[in-house]
Image (cartoon, rainbow, N blue to C red):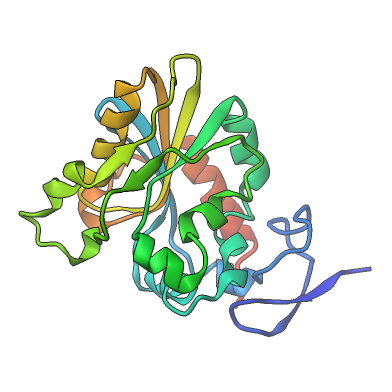
Length: 226
């Protein structure tokens, strides 16, 4: 018997029938809403460290992320990663999650940190060690001022010499925030660092198509809902 559920995005009843969600425990988003994402799996490097970005930072993604961040719709959080949780847990099984910090003012206003909520669905150990020393939003800065982020983010007193770090964030645009975080992690002894972001802005896209990207795009095509 097919399990029915209500999509947290379109609020319509859906059935657990596709290859994408058949193994998902309590799916939150239907195939039609999921297929609206532009799934890419871009692979590139930041300061020499491997980075994987799952989606394009297009209008659909922006709208969903704003619904979570700006409208405080926390039930959407799981939908960004639920299709890949098992694979990501396997790939990064020996890594510690480290979250790129967001605006403390915004976190207090919404009652949660959206990056932590999204990536906490991964069953990985966490290190909450990066923070901003003042209320500062990178998205509100000019292109010339965005490099100042290196003076805003700080790291707690921690020894990372024996730890593998998975640095996670929602969006990569210029890469300045990730670079600042990477340098701080290196300063505490981290040598094994990987980066995972939900999405990547157009100016950072890499057109190389990986086997992982091809496999997931094929799966999406198979399960396309009209």
